[in-house]
Each structure stands twice: as structure tokens, then as C-alpha cells.
Length: 124
Image (cartoon, one colour):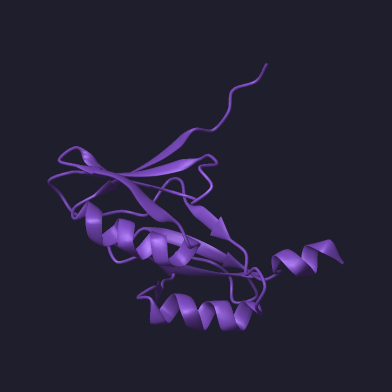
């Protein structure tokens, strides 16, 4: 049997701030909060969990791993606007002008992408 993705760990200078942002983005909730970090997950308990772990330094370089998102139930433009209203900022990581995704950063600068096709576009 293959492995199953259980947790995604993200280093954070202020874990609660980043966890709150991602809860709003994903519609998830905090499932654990201790001095060792903050964990968020879907309300139905499905995996993976995202753990935001405290570190003493702020982010300084481009992430080697990032999350890709797709709009679900709304247009990609509407989702982009919502993400920016939540505090996501557009960033340039060297993507081409005709990229089929938008690169954004969370409140601590962790890059993630909003892909051009929504969940519903893929079903067509």
C-alpha cells in the first residue's frame, strides 16, 4: 500500500496569523493550537492537515514547495478578488506574462498559485 499524505508543515514566524488566513482561504478550521504550533483541517476531518510551526526567523527566499488552488463554485477572477481581500498579495517569482496561473503570497510571504481553470472547468 502506498503512503498517504497526512500533514503539510509550514514554518511560520506568527503561526496563528498564517493559520487564520489559510482557514479563511480553504474554509477550514483550527483543530489544534499549542506552543508547538497551529493545525488546521477540513471540518469533516479529511486529510491532509496543515501545521503552522513556529520558527524564530521570517521567510527570506522563494518556497521550494507551494500549494496550488482552484476556484470552486465561483469564477477564477472572483476567487482572485476574494483571496486578495483576505490579504493575499500578487508576487513575481519569474512566471511568464502568459502563465495560466497567478502567483500570490500569504501574510508571511509564502507563495501559492491560483490556477486558471476552476474545479468546474475541469469537469467539462
